[in-house]
Image 1: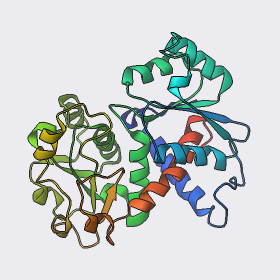
Image 2 (image 1 turned 60 degrees about the horizontal axis):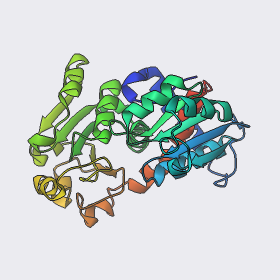
Image 3 (image 1 turned 180 degrees about the horizontal axis):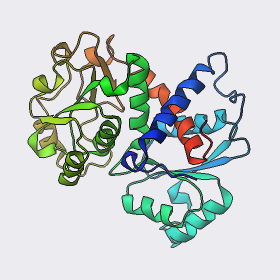
Image 4 (image 1 turned 90 degrees about the horizontal axis):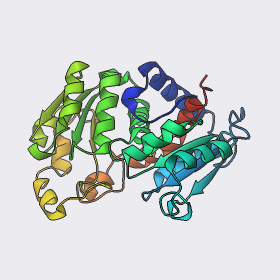
Length: 310
């Protein structure tokens, strides 16, 4: 049994296995319908319990299809309908009950402390579907998409992130770039750089990560340009002030022109005004392929959690 909570805690050999397995499984589904199970149905009879404390579209749909295609089923739990918190049932008791009824638990939460509490008392795998500090399933799927499109070793990719570098997406992306030895340029305002603990970890691991305060410098000769919504799910800030801070960090056609000619644009969605319509819907944008790939990588994450990776 394996948990999938933070990319930095997972051995790189296992991360590579997940990506390799996702590639194989995607190739074998070309003639199958959406709800047709994979021929080997490796998780037949298994049930994935899911709970969303935050709104979700892609994570909800991708995990539903992932377990279904692997031969299992899922049940989505709504926090307001449980005894948890409101009814006074402890996380430890809830976690033990989930372990009794389910085979794996995916939690999208507003509290890292809560995620760790579930892990502490759970006897089934716990998957982090998003927490304030981390979005590991999204980022590993993004790495898969980049490798799929670029068709070369991921360690030879030069990636550029434009936007808030202090959010959960950026935390997981930095962890992935260090693990896979990816060159990452970050373009962000000075007040929105990665936290000091993460910067210290980058230095300790000799990560190939540079921080810029001008997007034009960061994006130069990059293979991939990524961004995220400026006001994220976890933000409790002065929104107007934050948006003003990012007025010079919008991804537009001129920004893309500084990157390599065959550079691609990725966005984890939902989008805001951090990218122009021209770029988001343009030929370099691979956001729909990126979103669909969540299903394939989620499947392999589930198999990793169940110790069933080939």
